[in-house]
Image (cartoon, rainbow, N blue to C red; front, side, top):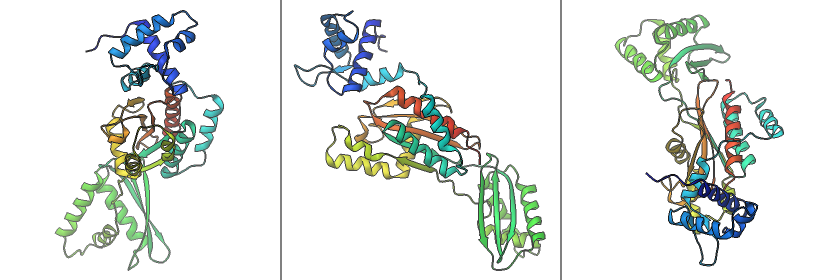
Length: 343
């Protein structure tokens, strides 16, 4: 375990990182001396910078140049911060962005767009349904032209609707009987288990003399209790990476952009780096584990429990040289807006 940095070393290191984030240029000792109001001489700063370089916090691109923060330095700097608050005008604009959005997809999509706009980096938002969702209740509504609206409500308060066409009509009374049968026998069951048990019962009662089971089989094959558990995920601003100096060849940059276009790759990125309980902001600097081309990138994100009970994740992907406090504030505020979603 490394010894903690001395107070002077900590302050100078943070000043170097802030200067590099603002200017993007190697930082000279005289620059830091001026930032401290000349309370530290350039010689003193130079000695501390030499110590920080030995400890792996700084690198020197050229002999005569200043110093550049390393991944280790950015990681230390990010860990020393707490999320600030967005300006009141921005917070109000963010609140208004979500007014009138009454679907899960719309709110997730807007979250990614808002994060991109607020940070000028890559905004990512995903709602990730639980694989083992449990049944609360179903409702079966007769429609015109032999159609039935199947409404499925799970115990995490997610509501799904599906209209299906039948070869033969089922009366409203029969639909009520089917609804009552399913709600009575399968309330609280995991959906996959409920479907397997329904299938078993129908296989046992091969003749299906019971009208309820006979019609239930029809609706079963139309997808009753079946749900799509694939994540709802959106990403905005991948083109913002093109203007960054990521030290990538053209081919490696293409690989990175292709990777970000893959929904599964984005889910893996969020799952790998956002592991803390809901509400805890996470900052990860250097993402080479996820993809070699992400070595110089950082991810700031948070897991959210929305009002519907559905888990979600929002994050910003950007360069290590990003304005961490502003991005942290944007992620935190966006997560709060998304957490208020009700469906």
